[in-house]
Image (tube, rainbow, N blue to C red; front, side, top):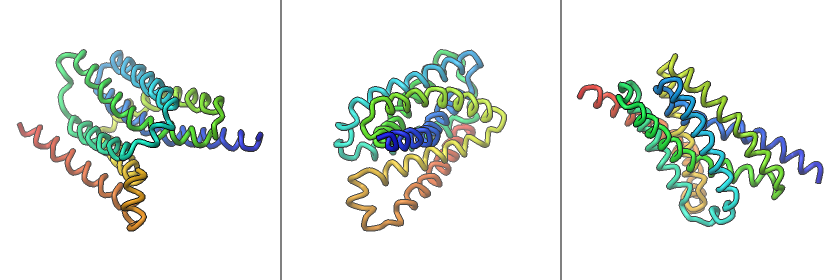
Length: 221
């Protein structure tokens, strides 16, 4: 039992480091253009929302696993978020900071719902039903999200081209959600294994192209 506990403990640390990164990218991208005070608020609200969602989703994880095509719907939502964040790059900050703040928080919450699902299912699986390990996974995600989001927002303000990298990460995550969906995997992927890497890769290219084209169209208006 001790061996299983420590194995789960270290697995959860690795999973949180990997899976919290996507949430941090979304929070950082959405907050990057806001003034410093509002940026801190968005990061705080976004982190709080992500943790609250993870607690809620952990409680209903068993039921969620039975919902058909849930991951596919989440992946499609994430694709839209990635395109929208990319298309908004370079736009002038909203005259009403309050509107910019609300818009950023809404974007983050939708993305958190999608990506927290994967984190919750992964952590719950690694914990093997141990309640304290699940709590540890949730607690560990808080500093990772806050520190990661601040870092992402700060770096993206200095290196705007990294927005494309962030959008690519979100698109690849969306592709992985879709190919890992039990319905898609059992009816499509098992007959064409190459789609498990082709779909995420194709979605990265699609999101970057559509997002860039949308941004260019808006800038010419």
